[in-house]
Figure 1 (cartoon, rainbow, N blue to C red):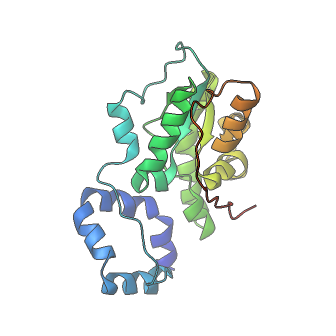
Figure 2: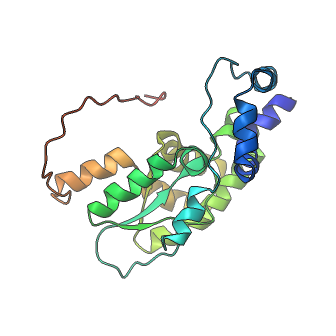
Length: 217
């Protein structure tokens, strides 16, 4: 169905919108555009959509020098798999991930050629395109794992794709390699804490925190 094809190409639309963020964010604030989105994709017109950012986070990361693996640097090694939402919409999330990891002395690498996880095409049954994205991501992450990097995801769905679905989608030898080396961010930080590698807090934080439990749990 046309709507399924549009949904499966979410990354393409996000990349296009990021080139014209003022126009796309203005359109998404208009009732007519949201009505069209509801008719084509089933996204409620009442839903408030996040504004797209001008530059993908992977491009910003390259300007910070995080786009090259440097396995000789000290500290635990992490290849951060950003995925679509943090890459095009929620840069604060991606920045927080990098900041927390670096504060813990982690050697952070953000592969510039990574793509979205492929969950969108897989959900609507576009297995061929999901497989294409999987193979591209395996090319970007396989060498990093061989260099001793752990793949860390801030999106639980991305971790699910890398750990379970890529092995089913492809017969690529790197699929098993990457699956074994992939962790959710919370799981990874918990491991650092258990080994005493997280920095000690210097000031108490008095705040309430809302936790959104991943849907597949």
